[in-house]
Image (cartoon, rainbow, N blue to C red; front, side):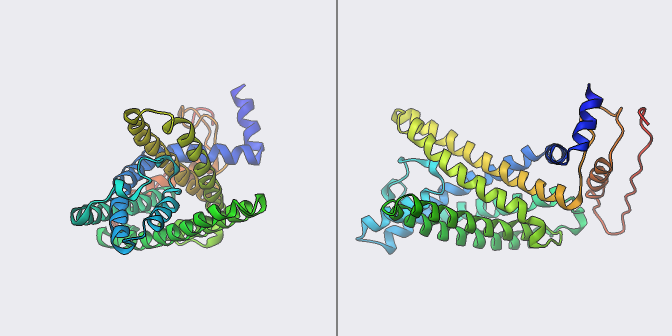
Length: 320
């Protein structure tokens, strides 16, 4: 039965591709890569909100309605935050808030950039000696933050338009959603290309970027549903736990989607499919070319110096 299923999935291009993406995600320990991204994103989010609300209090002093509108548009990108942090005065901190916000935002933001670069280089099996040094990786993280910041500004504007588009009916909302997906796809295209030391074209990363943009839009919709049915109906104390756990889950699922979409690009470009069905479970298996290319890439990714040579050979299995 197992051999029949193996032959069946190898003959089906769609099934073989999906299985190869899952196996590549497991081989790269994608869940741990996503957890690292989640940690730094969670650490940076609240200092960024603290810094933003403090800045709004200074720049938009005397305009509370405008402060609320900007905050609401920004927080809509993270719908699970809910109403607990939806008011500017909830996170105002004065001078101390500015200092804490800057330090926390820089630490967490650079950590997010470093974690994403590590995940992308791991997925693309970039040798360690070809990855950026500790200084360059942080400079690239700073550039990535600028790209993400621009995306937040654009998404904030679209969120404000979405609020107004409710008066335009279904067509207006659909147009705003399509524009949001297009902007997110463009940001993902740039992000997938610049966060790895591997030279890639936009065509190489387009499928994963488009998938990530669509899933991100769906996550925002489900996040809003979570706020409506869980956080708002909880007590104040339970609402805090629901907020924290919901935000962690939201960030982790987002990071998982990011890593999986990167693996989609890798499997497609490197043609790492089909894979042997029992590869992750036993050594008694006949490896496919996709299996061999995957394991060769993983081994060569450990090359620490340019004068180090890594040769990979495969002994015949029992099936062979």
